[in-house]
Amino acid sequence: MATLPHFVQYQGSKRNLAKHILQVLPTKINRLVEPFAGTAAMSIAMAANQIAQNFWLNDLNKPLIELLELVIEKPNQIADFYSDIWNEQ
Image 1 (cartoon, rainbow, N blue to C red):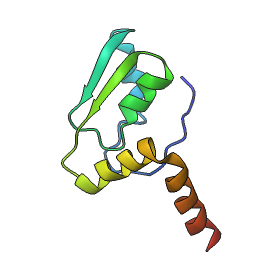
Image 2 (image 1 turned 60 degrees about the vertical axis):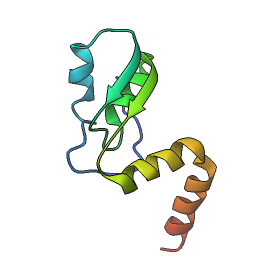
Image 3 (image 1 turned 90 degrees about the vertical axis):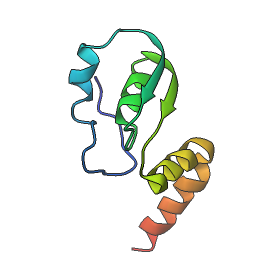
Image 4 (image 1 turned 90 degrees about the horizontal axis):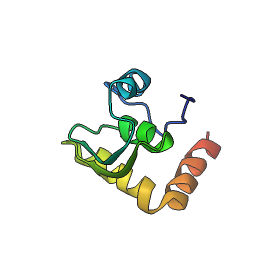
């Protein structure tokens, strides 16, 4: 499994475990439900490996979910925002 870029570091992320978790899951599913999505590490890994076609993400951390929605719905806007922050350093 290739290393995928991640847009934010998050404590408790399943990113480093994803390759191991994928080994014990079915190779194709219609929908992945992530009740503790965090930064959606499993959804990203399953999408990259074409395992799941649809994703349902949930997390109690509302600002994090709102950030994920921005990344999905307005990727150019969030990329420009990150770029502005980076260039101001």
